[in-house]
Length: 112
Image (cartoon, rainbow, N blue to C red; front, side):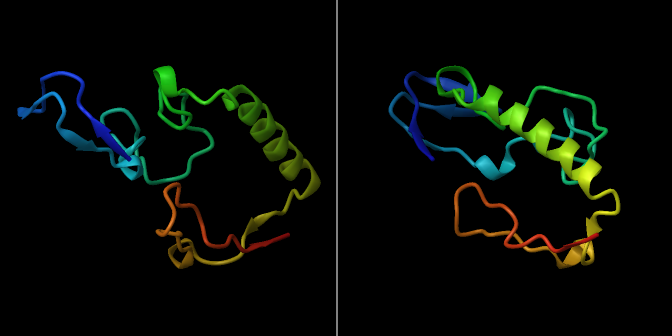
């Protein structure tokens, strides 16, 4: 996502001038090991910490509250409806779509 600095600033010892192009790596969001323990591991028991999943500030997703409710309902109902649901392949076999900005799994095989 190309962005342009509005004012001169320093980021981690790098000087950025107003008007400079700044590229954001959205794939790196939520992977700071000083904030997230084992950030590359899916952990439903992980304590809640601030994240960038729904953006921040003026770019905060207006649908975030609805998405959170939907996810809570879906995961609760999946567990209740399919108590033996489990991954249908080895974790190492899962692949991600690198052609899209948001990525995501190309497929999620499951058994129940």
